[in-house]
Length: 182
Image 1: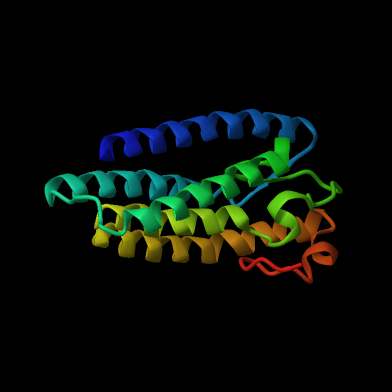
Image 2: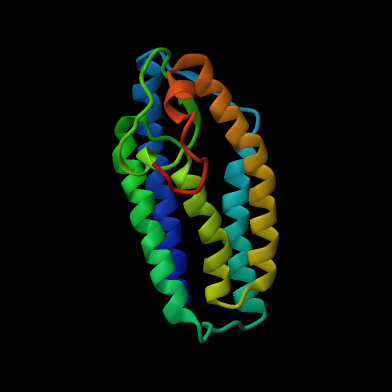
């Protein structure tokens, strides 16, 4: 079961990279400006290292599925629904990079009508609960902490870029970053 999940995560990430690359071309052709490129390789490395750490911790320490799997699996399934709701809602604007088309309006549909950064919430939940599903506590704690550090860089860079080029400030002034509210 573990290798099936790992393969699913790898296929998911690779597919997302293809979608992001297609959307990147579309955004740049429309005059999009990339921001935060200096930290982007660290985000990619974080995700790759997460998968490797999970693989090694589960294999080397012979970890098994937790008895709480019946709680964690529905949480993880729900986060995937939010992930793809966010991707579909952003459409061609969805990207793994920060690419902003000046004077375009901020997307206000899907989960973005309730919070500013639903996809970052999904990643945070994954970095914690996927390892916990296999009792990989080291990976859960380490990558949750590393993700927090990365998000303290990424989110301000993204919000600054959106404020510079879009109607972000007026739209999201009343929305929470991570907790849904209307």
